[in-house]
Length: 460
Image (tube, rainbow, N blue to C red):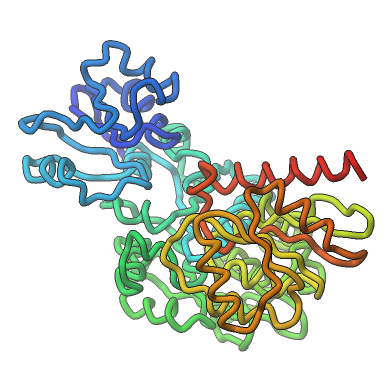
């Protein structure tokens, strides 16, 4: 059992007062910390909960106002969206403040045994599936992190070593860990993403590799053997490396044998779990997610029976290849979690020919050439919106794809898609971009898509 981090009387600056920042602030406040807050938003635009926490206003810096140059803090708790190289953050570090994130804070307060999942794509599906497997085994389980539930909300309530905290971790969250050490870490894949923040793939890979930086030989690192960039990071890892592969048989780890998901443990014992055709989540990428989840949980000590049951029952997560409706023979699929080209490539690959594809959004400086190349005659029309619409159109035309419609917003995209569709076609939202130019998050974007589809249903 971990010793709780003593925050009483500590001076903390919470940087970013969104969901994770507010959760960190509430927990720190309940433990007697002296709180200051910072957010780029104006005071009047902040959540009412932030205003309540900083009622006197003197300890709240908002709307571009930064803490006084001579202010001293014991620690800064950075929200994932906050770049750690802002001048006032660097100045605070120079004056002795520790820079950590909400995940690190939660870990120090106590999270039980941790299974942490990262990767460019598949994190939410794999994290959710691991959580379902642990619950099927009757273990007290929390599913937190980048999946949308702050880790500090359950910290210090799950300190029992029998409890399991399953964590989805982004590269931004991994930048601000210090002591965090999961019993099992998982790296699903590594393709270009967030290069607007990390600048290079080497920097991005270094951020992902932090997931295992504190692990020892008594821990496990589950990694995709079929992804060369991800598997190369295993050379840096001190933990036991447990590969998974859908393409080759393995002497250790998870693979596919005779149409079944199988896991071999360190002693060579083979666990035959379930048929690949029994999975309810479609696509080769989801088979990889299932293999990773099976390896992570079996090596965490979860019984095979619980793994089998959850693999067969799991139906996927919201906003990832989510079938919203079928109207007049036209399928509407919500893949708002397709926030980068590689993720949306997998969505296109999983759908039948006859795709009316809605794409575009915030520019993370991604290259869209491979995304367009994946169309392979399956995409009939490209419906573009958002900041990257022009960039996507140029990439499409360069590859000889010219059936492009620029749309003002989601409602127009959905209407135009349905108008052009024929029975058997799919109107697929898989933007290949983040949502931040038009929405606060991919969930909001996905919900808007579903409302637009309901509007079509209402007039059909």
